[in-house]
Amino acid sequence: VLIGVSFGGILVQEMSRFLRIRKLIIISSVKSREELPRRMRLAKHTRLYKLLPTRLVNNIDAFTKYEFGKTVSKRLELYKKYLSVNDKVYLDWAIEQLICWRCKKQIPNIIHIHGDKDAVFPIKYISNKIVLEGGTHIMIVNKFKWFNENLPKLIIE
Image 1 (spheres, rainbow, N blue to C red):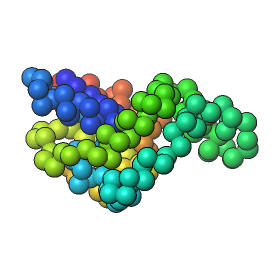
Image 2: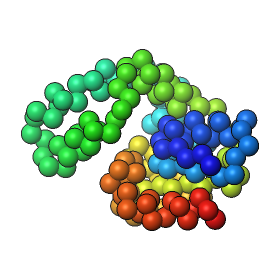
Image 3: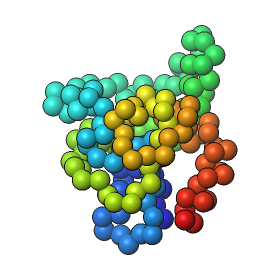
């Protein structure tokens, strides 16, 4: 069983092409390049993704010093706590792989769990999914109770 979240969802799909797996589950991700939002497809053709300030990920502490309001401050704290990959070189590579992903055909029988409030991969572009109401791109963190209850059932089925 392979499970991937966000870019990890793309990685496990690519891994499943050469591994024998029983089940493939992606969360807050996309199943093909057709599910990428327009802004990402445009970024591919214009190469604008090369201009993203990924070095700022190392400076989340600096952002938490400013008063943005409870929601933004809370989200920054979550990112600081759970964003384990903060290497600029890796992030630049991962963003390019995501934006330039060539997958046209969706893998059959994939289980796709997606939040209806995901701002990174808006739900309007996503087909064949299990919708988590109120779920954002980081719902794996703040909707953990749903995952604890339902993920074992999805794996066993």
